[in-house]
Image (cartoon, rainbow, N blue to C red; front, side, top):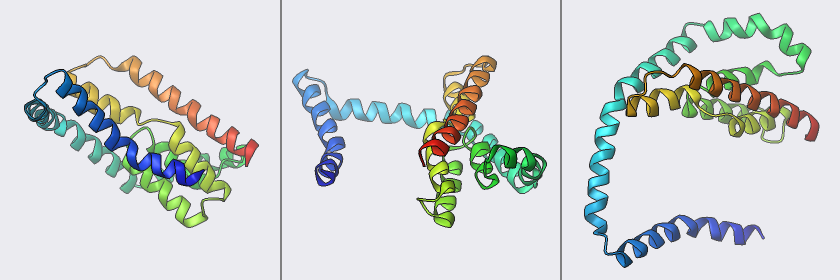
Length: 176
């Protein structure tokens, strides 16, 4: 069964791309020219969001390197101990709404350090898939299209991230 799933996953992306190209040719769309136009738009979008990305990366680095993250962990450690929430996973919970790459690095480090079948490894894996990069999405995507009133989006997104983190803790505690 696993070899079938592996074979399907190897061929699904090339298959979808091939299907799109066949469909475009069938409808007499100039595939290469359309791709080049899309690439031009993507490049200009990348240039447009660059200041937002740099600002967010600087803020994340300052938060980590200033010791503010460790200060917060030490401050709320008694509450986490009472909730049976390992403090080792807290940086992942903080980083997940900020940066997908940063949170993936933290999750990877936790899994490498504690093992994928440990409670911390399973919690980190579940949490990585249960929350989104809300602030990244608001910064990059909303910045790209020029949306300035983002207050409600941030509140709802961060609340959804909190629910994802709590659900991860509950599910991993119940099932593993």
